[in-house]
Amino acid sequence: TTAPGVPGLWRAVVRNNTDQPVIGAIISWVENNHVRHSQTQDFGPGEAVEVRWNWPGADGPGVSRAEVRAEPPADLSDSNEEDNRRWDYINARQPTAARVSCAETRERGNWEVTYAVIVGYNTRETTWTWTLPSGETQTSTESYTDYSSPIYAYYDVGYSESLSAAVTLHTGQGRLPDPARPAAEDQDGRGAWEIIPYARAKGLDPNQVTRAGAGFTLRVETNYSTDWETKVPAGAEAIGGILTGPDQVTAEFYDTRGTVVRTLALEKTEGGDTGRAIWQLPLASHTYQDGAGARKRWFYTAPDIPDGDYQVLVRVSGAGMQGLHTCKVAKARIYGSIYDDIYEGIKGSR
Image (cartoon, rainbow, N blue to C red; front, top):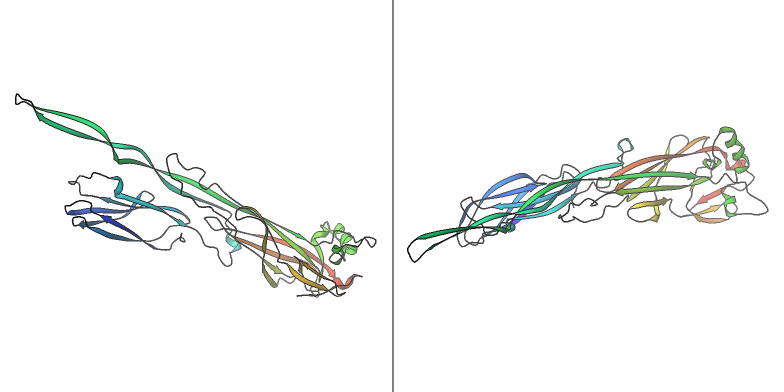
């Protein structure tokens, strides 16, 4: 496995399996059934030589079929052509950037893979000559299938992948506390008495409105899918491997003045290495002014910021072969301060 554009060294050991010297054998380096470089090589009887080629690297993310072919001179017969070629596959995956650009998101990717399939074998002719008692010479020719000389067909198969993400921000201000039935959510929803009518008047969801000094939860649902190796041609060998991702989700918090106040790496709380996954804020301990404490996945804003939109930029990256990445924005409306409420405000967090 490598990254696009990273050069590499292709190496192979070619052996002369005869007791005669071989002069002018052609060594070809083939990528996806296209000859990229050729060279000639001489061999002594039984000699093995390591040959090399400086591969310039893959043009882009994908899988390259790397093959070396050794062809003897035209005047030299070969009893086994099948052992004159060897191949392998090189995965060129886009590495995960430390911080992806939201101006150049990549939610879909496509690439081609070259598969080789044996579709037949060359035929040969064998001729016998013998002499009858009368002195007459007779000749007979017979054709046969030479299973050491396969005929290959090459198929380019296209694969694709996609990444999606959805962000949900929830302030907990859409529920009025019930004094007769106190609940843990009351601590973070103490501004609901004023936020709910404000949100109704402005046509907003109260669970996207909060106080300065209060906060919100963040939930990011990602989904990576691919049809990798679902279309392997009949008779071809699968390359193998599993494409996964994303492997990184971060959230940048911008206060109502447009200032970046914090960047957090989100934690995967549901899902595996592929398909659907849920990412949330890391668990942290918080202490309120009344001394009550809680350990939860919550982000608290500063208590002194002005009203306005508090934005969260979510960056999702590191998915699949192409290094798919995307960005999403969520926002909470700041309306008033926790000090406007009759409940105790947050003291701080640790």
